[in-house]
Length: 613
Image (tube, helix red, strand yellow):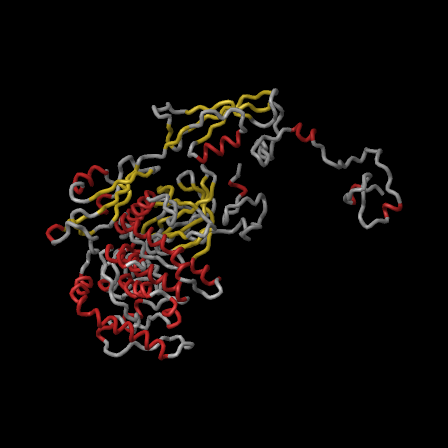
């Protein structure tokens, strides 16, 4: 059993009584900077705080330890630095006078966001949120800790600083799908960047860095944290509402960095001098549809930009059919160095890459421009509509031939409500598919996610609604008699059960604990299925010899989880015992004493302390 007293507060690995962690170099007596929680502070009587990993205007993230499940976690504390204070003698957060209402509203937004994320637990590209709790006058979110490196560091460690489209597609398309799920749950990230995408040891990428919207918006009530080159123009306080298209810009900027090897130019700088372009050597290597998708998603103004995940996914596909089904027309590719290429009669300027001849890029630019002019007449009306429309284009439907049949859907309203409410309002209007998924906190029938996101849609549009089926339920095994305790405990814990050992000591069995029965604490239902978290008694026979105790008085276990007994040492005595009264030791010969390495009676090497002069 891991003791929290023996853990490093930086990496949560066991270090015993060592002053400096041999794994990460953290000193056990290190202190936390003010006003953040001191190490080993326990939140909500369960979560022990470790080293602070990062902070911004919204709050701080600590590594931590779950004292119940005995595992490493991360803890996000809501502690806005612009209007809260905390003293070393009183850990309860104090809100500055006049800011109480702002604190209350932002704290509610913090709790709502993390509660929604907890409902999405299980998606591979999202962090796994376990709990949202209150303590010390503020709120905390708890999620699983996992090892990995940021996409930024991953790219910097590569030989070229970028990767191929095929590798980028495999790495980043799950992120795009996860963004679609977030948007269906009415969550806008606003901070997608190479620094908030983390690649785990399994090679899969996860989205981290979730914050309330005010923390990612300039001129808000919080000190904002914006990732230059990845933040959309509307996040800097310019005209333009934030929405799904805000994350689309950031994702496209990440894809640009991954494929090109350099950070995109800041959207603020592009407003006055748009010099963003795809260098010639990359333009030649990348598929045309990928360049087209990047161009449309990196448009500066929100109204000019790709609006939804579905649209961007279609544009990053080589299939024209997929593009049509998404409801997004295929806009002609235009060099991103110009915001509105049709307003500039001259060809696009040459790429900045000095290794490529100017003539080569000019030809590519002229090709894009010619393509744009050729399609301009046929697409002009549709382009104007897409530039001014605030709603995502509805998917194609056989019943969507006129605007009178468009139906408005507010997905945010239904998240957390019962399936019956959505069915009653839209069951006869849309083609709705309900998918059930186990959830630890949401009640059965509670809506977890809706796809597509909020917008206006034609009658008959396909909707997918994910609802909770309640806590996951598993059967108990019929017979585990004769197995060792640690094997049974590992099996049941993996199934989500809480194990409670009940011992009967006997001297007629081996020293390894043997299971002779299990018993559920709760009454079995008709299907003999039990909810995760059900307490299970594991009845065991154990040897009645005298237990070997550690310095804390607790029973010692071996590597397999079995108790160690004092007579174990008698069965396996040490090879040498230092006993001054033992006169049976044969004297060491002069020949032996002259050897470089001391030897014992049987010829094996021994340490010098066992050689008698």
